[in-house]
Amino acid sequence: MNDFFPFIIHQVIPSLNTGLFVSIKLIVPSALLGLLIGVVTGTLGVYGPGPVKKLCDFYVALFRGTPLVVQLYFWYFALPYTNFWGIRIVMSAVTCAIVGFSLCSGAYHAEYIRGGLLSIKTGQLKAAQALGMTPFTSVKSIVLPQAFRHSFTGCCNEIIYLIKYSSLASIITINEMTGIGRGIAKATFRNVETFLVVGIYYLILVSLAGILLNYVERRMEIPGFERQAR
Image 1 (spheres, rainbow, N blue to C red):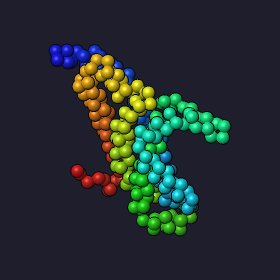
Image 2: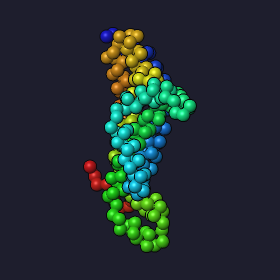
Image 3: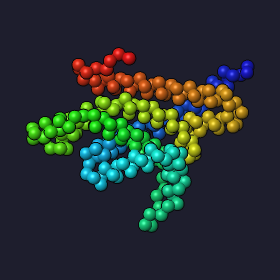
């Protein structure tokens, strides 16, 4: 135990710093794409035509109902061996991870957005259309901004979850923080020190994301409708 801190400072932290940048490269695009997918899917699931609603429901049920690990295995290990009309799709491990995280996260975002949209009274849509606005413009300019504010807390939680389950990228050969930590532990048998630091790294990432998301939420507040103090 005399070399507890030297081991962490000289071996664990430098390696994890490399993995940190890989994790961020996975998390940021996945969070943005997942939120975009969720907004589009949630909106179409409420206001789209019947067949589109059923398609959105199927997408949400599929990606919420299957484990993320299985989804990642499919994108990385199964898809390259699947032949679509003579076309074989092969993606890099990073691309597979971003696709998997985005689609899974988007399914959860869609449900938050759908709940937010259903909380808006239909009278607002009728009033907007009475003023000559098209249904698309009414939803885009009046209903969706309100629904997004209502569902933003849930969407923030999903982004926090995404940061944590980004660690699953290591199962498809990506050396992000968890993958590098596992390699260090196997090579040195210093499991306690290694995974303690890995956990601290994730805790810091989640804390920073929470601060940023709380700032965005405050910026989205409408005067007179601020959140009540917790």
